[in-house]
Each structure stands twice: as C-alpha cells, then as structure tokens.
Length: 361
Image (cartoon, rainbow, N blue to C red; front, side, top):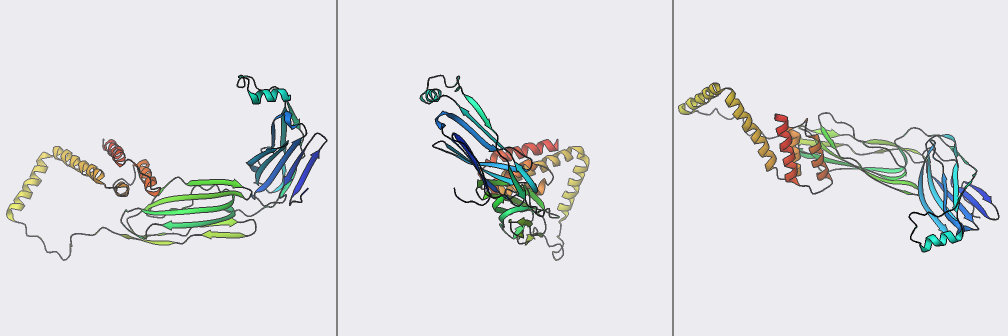
C-alpha cells in the first residue's frame, strides 16, 4: 500500500472491505481536504449500487468530486472544507444493495417492465470508523486560498453623466468566497451594478473560481475610484490584494452663450411687442397654456428617447432625466452594454415611454 500524507482507515475481511484515505488531518480553517473512499467486494456481481460518503455536518462543507467503478472496487472522491476550528469529527454512510445475479442480468437485458418493477434485493449498512481532523484556526479574512484581484476601467475621461465602465475580476483556488459585491459607494456618483458572473469548478486543489463584477459609474463632476483591498490567507501567509486607484475627469457641458463678453442683443420694437403679446396670451390662457406646455415638454422627452442611437446614449438620458426611477430598465441597458449583448432597442424604448407616461399621470 502506498504511503500518503494524512491517515488511512481499513476494514478488510475475506469477502469485503473498505478503505478511507484522508490526505490531510491537520488543515487550516477552510482549507480543502481530499477524501478518497473505497469499497471492495468479492461478490461484486451481486451489487446493484454502493453509497459511501461523509455525513452532512455543520462543521464542514462537502463537495462530491468523482466516482469510479472497476472490478468490484468502488472509489468515491470528496472535498471537505472545515468551517470550524478545533477537533472536527467526520462520520460516514456506507450502504450497499445486493440482489441475485439472475435479477441483475434480467434488468440489464431488459424485460419490458424495468420502469415498474425495480430489482428486488437487500440493503446492507456498515459501521464506519469516523475520522478526526485537528483544524487550525486563522484570523478573519476575506479570502482563503491563493487568489488574484484585477481591475479594468474603460476610460479616465468622460462627459457629464456619461457612464464609466469599471470591472473587477477575482480569480484563484481555495475556498469559494461568498462575496456578491466588493465595490464601495462613492460620494456624488451613481453606481449601477450587474449581478456578478461566478464560475466555480472543483478539483483536488479546492474550488477554482473566476468572479467578474461589472459596474457603470455615472457622475456630473470629476471623482476618484478608490483602491479596492481584500485580505487573504493562502494557508501559509497573510496577504492583502489591492487594485489601483483612478482619477476620473468629467467634462461639464459647454456653455454655448458667453454671458460676460457677449453684448446685449438689440431687440427691435416689433419683437418687444410680440413678446408682450406672448406673455399676455399666456396670462389669459392660464390653465390651458400650462397643459399645452406640459404636453410639449413630455413630447420633447419622448423624442429624446426615440432618437437615442444606441444603448449607451439611452442609458445616459435615463441617468440624467430620471435619476431616481426606471432602475430596472437602467440595469437592463447596463447589463447589455457590459456583456456586449444585443437587445431589442425599440422594445426597450417602448417600455421606457410607457413607464414615463405612467409617472406623469
């Protein structure tokens, strides 16, 4: 038998036996522990199934990796992540079901009644010696394992209310972090957030993850994206992962009229008289004129939405004109932009116009 780091538990008889390989018995908190569970049986042709696994526990998290069957040997591999320090007991479930060889052959060959007549057999349960882990405690950190944190900002200069797209990528192996948001609020900046994209795969090294966090930052004035810091323990040393900080320059809208140097316009007498008539008309019209102006105002806003040439321009209009509403539609546009996904822009515009009309009633 090969020598491994950890412990081996054996129960062997002439007819059957089991073996448990624990590849590390003194892990750190949330460090992956590989378990290899084997069951072998001389009369393996009578076996219909084998269940061999660690029992559920509040002291650890378990993940099934793979199963292998060959010549009467059943091998199951699991990962355990201890989530409590100190002595952690691992109990096991070992059950097998056996049936006469003739019944199994009948099932394999098919009789036409397989769905309604399961194989008759007997289930056997075995007592299994538990495993004790001595789990070492660590300081509270954000990440357990070996990870990297990278950032990307699409531009460092933009017009007022033009979205700045900021992406954080967390990648590595260890214990899968339960982090849904790692970006802090910035005073004076509207932050639109996508649902994080989380990819997780498991191997003998633990959970290998790649999390992508997408943000759209909207502001009317210049601001600073602060450095993001996460504390990590890589099962050897404590580290701090950090990103760069970025100064974002926002260009305010140009004032097309020079109020200081431009001379006062010479207004002809007729224009003055016309203005007087306009004011008089507004005064006399009263409520009717107010309604007309409101309709014109609403029409202008609708036209802005209809004439928006793409998702970015439409999102900018919503951020400026409707800062405290239409959040679901803003999020839908932001996700389409950040994920470079095609959407039906005409359909989105129709939804926006419908919501605007509701708000104005």
